[in-house]
Length: 233
Image (cartoon, rainbow, N blue to C red; front, side):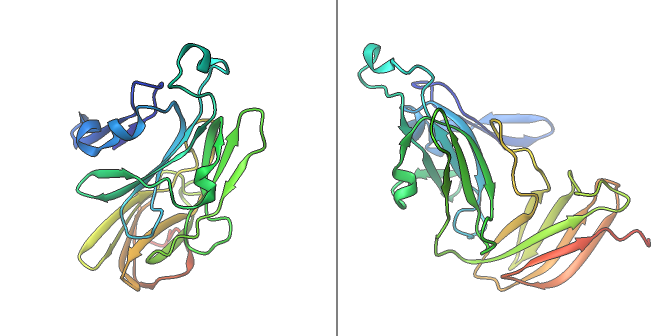
């Protein structure tokens, strides 16, 4: 799916991937219209903030005109950032009251995601205009997790473009190895899966950029695992 940040009073946009190169506008149905209308968004990203297995959204906000309050009393140059929590069935709610880091009012631009303390949840580095950056540490009391660090052999070294399908408890989660984030940002190359209540990943299938497919089974959670591309086949 695709999420696009927009100008204030336009709302951000969520496009649901229907397959076959077709997308549907799911902005209104998802609840994002109301949540984002009053903000001007820049950096953003899907991430699992509470390790329950579904993807939430973070949006870095800040206007581009430092005198906007003079022409629009309802607008602001400095704005708070947003955590939009996925509550299931494609619905997001604004959960930006979760901690002092989300209460900061700044002119934010870039947002990069990474597990800075390797505790199994993604933290966020936010770049601010004419201010110090902010580092938002994720201390959510979430579920089980598993992190993967891929190393390519026939593929590129960092396995950029690899597609990982993790199956556990009758549910399959799909992630891709990427470094690019959103506006002027680069993410942690490790891939992090929230497992919810499952303590073991039953099956992990990796489709490497070289085209090779590799399967690893029964990986215990709460750890980062390094996996090298198997070129013996």
